[in-house]
Image (cartoon, rainbow, N blue to C red; front, side, top):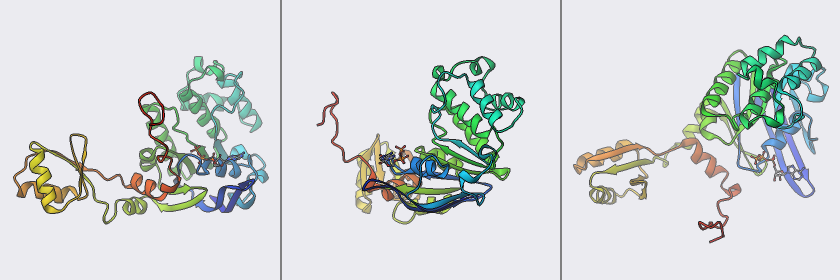
Length: 311
Ligand SMILES: Nc1ncnc2c1ncn2[C@@H]1O[C@H](COP(=O)(O)OP(=O)(O)OP(=O)(O)O)[C@@H](O)[C@H]1O
């Protein structure tokens, strides 16, 4: 169990983390989401004692991280997969970790096998690892001490699709066996698939949190219905939509309509319009994320022309 209470971190006059409180329960994966610079990494660094808090507390299993006698056996941490010594091999990095935690060297082989790093790859120096390989090694390092809590900053970063699925299954299995997982990510879809609980942060403040299903329902709630629709006769479709009073904007080869697929389908039937595509255009979590963090998004930056100059 992780308990974060009133966590605040300021840098000069700037507040990077602003009175953040949440808990992560055993047996669940908690997704920590927010735009660039929202305060996710800072919060996680404070949790594991790498950055001091200005105020507030974090406890893991009831103790501050710095008070845990053998922290690697309690908390697995992956904050920056490149933060290890670049001249060491993957095997050396894991062996040092195992020794520090008082684990047998057989644990290193187990972990290498678990993250699918081959014997040859394990002998390579970290500086010659691909990003995905570094992430795999980082996950192996985090799991080395068989901890009950995992704190992972963007663990899917650099993994290929098969690697992302592997990590998803790994973390879900870990939580099912009673582990507590906190992971940050920009990959909303990925978090939707993996997390049970979600925390959305913007400008250092929590803007939403709770059970994934409840947040998704909120994101896809009343007034947010959206469909993507195309027809053989687009003009007839546009006319029918207009007549019914549905707001429609051109998207792809058809329209995005502020109505449910059932309503659009019914309308097409009434007007005998043959549809070539009709699907749900709402992305509950993405819409909610963009709405709640809209003041922290950067898309107000000037558009670039094809030469990269500001238009
Ligand atoms: N040592 C520091 N000195 C000054 N400002 C800092 C420092 N560390 C972080 N910040 C600022 O705090 C804010 C939060 O940064 P943080 O790295 O926690 O964001 P993040 O949510 O992890 O972003 P990203 O998704 O881009 O990794 C940013 O504006 C960042 O510039």
